[in-house]
Length: 329
Picture 1 (cartoon, rainbow, N blue to C red):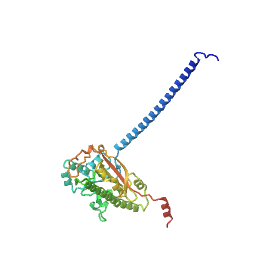
Picture 2: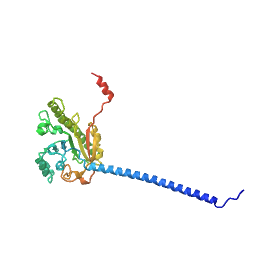
Picture 3: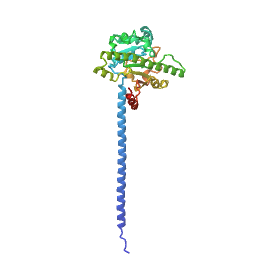
Picture 4: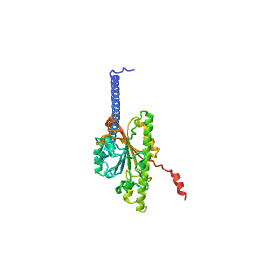
């Protein structure tokens, strides 16, 4: 047997070690690239999420729950500062706005809000805004004193005789009773909000179905292009004559326990959309107590609030039922 040469095994071992080192380095580089790709993907997702969040915030910051060319009835107004603000900010046309108060008269509101109401009222009055007093949000038809002999067009005037009522809005509803028992307080406000939904529904139907009927008679049942566009607009009414019911409330308790979505559902309305109430969008608006000019315990600007828009819940008929019905003469 021949003698093994020195250095051969070592050379072979060194080559294997170098190959192994190169392999390990290549493996490490591959792992590093993989980790970098994962990090880049996460960063891209984070960037996408941040962009999406920024777009959402932009939408919320510019959110107004009604269109400039739509009609709006405000119920439960306090010192009329919200009505003034939405006109000053050019969110709505004065001729498309109706402002109502639960209080009985101008004098009563002047006494209640001595530093703000008179100026707000004069501003709205000079622009010809329709304003009504002693209007109960839970009994709109009754307190507007609508009847066969006193129809909507008679109360509102000629400008409103062919206008659909598209939106009814109630900001921060409160009974003003100050009930300390929380369960009773919640039940009391649920009754108020349920009544508001029910009353708004009835007013929509009374006003809008009459206008639709009048327009249909005028056009002999044919829909004009302008009317079709009007009915298909964002603030359009449904076939039953319903528009949008809008409600703003503070976040947290006891407001969350009012369960406004459930109360809406019981009135055949569902949530269309909601958004954070942006106080900065209404700089002239000063939220006050229901029974006085004093600010609420915590300044409203520091309180989180939300605006909800509800639309009629339309039940879809099953195709099979529609087909069966179509065969019946």
